[in-house]
Length: 293
Image (cartoon, rainbow, N blue to C red; front, side, top):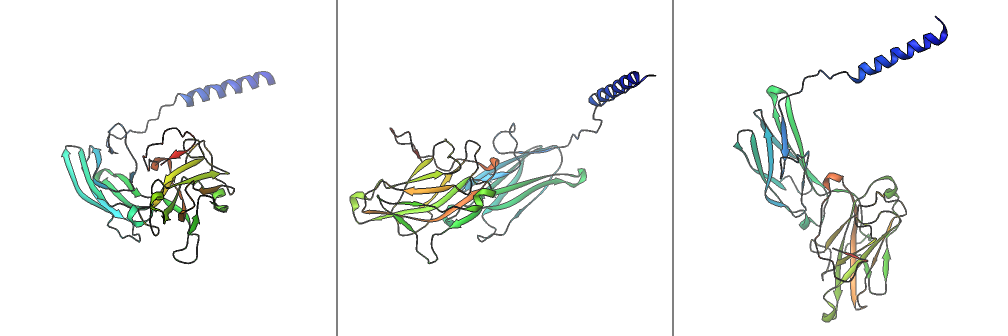
């Protein structure tokens, strides 16, 4: 047999083996037992539950199964304790359909959107089958800039001033989706006490989800940071990451008799599954260059 014939035979054998592998059928058995979880529609199952910042009363989790289940709930210890989420009932409303009803406290009065979490599990030991369901509220805070070493100090701007955040090297090594901050205003002129606004412009990195670079927020009157003036912005868009050059500029178009105070600037990391709308304020007509929240 000459060399050309040998090469041809080897190639043919390899082709046959590849064809056999491509047609190979996975003979491993497919389990008929199942545990599925959904919140709204059984056509859209979930692997975790993201509780809204404002909390929930009579929240529902639906579990579909064809095996008898045992369940338990564990909550991670945080500075706020372990009672932020209460399982009110676990009821089998019809065969194979279990409804979990729960209450979750708001995280906003804590002046934070930091993450707190728990774990709800369903299992059928006899079938070696289980479903593990993380329940989360808030997000993973990467840093907080309080702008001061003394309590009560903060950044203050007026109509002819701006404040630009410093560069944060951590932005170059992680993925950030939210920023939050406290903003409140003071004025001695009661005619200027309404419609006080603050513009937050991002540069050197990501855009806001609409592709624009500026958000405008309404700023309430106040005397310090609290749950009523905690503002947070959604930052996703255009597949961009923040970088060490990413900065945020705070500015206001209000009269110089209005003082806008800013404190507790924070950045949060979240996952795509946890994305959601935070505010639903209507945009003001005639201004297409600014997003309003």
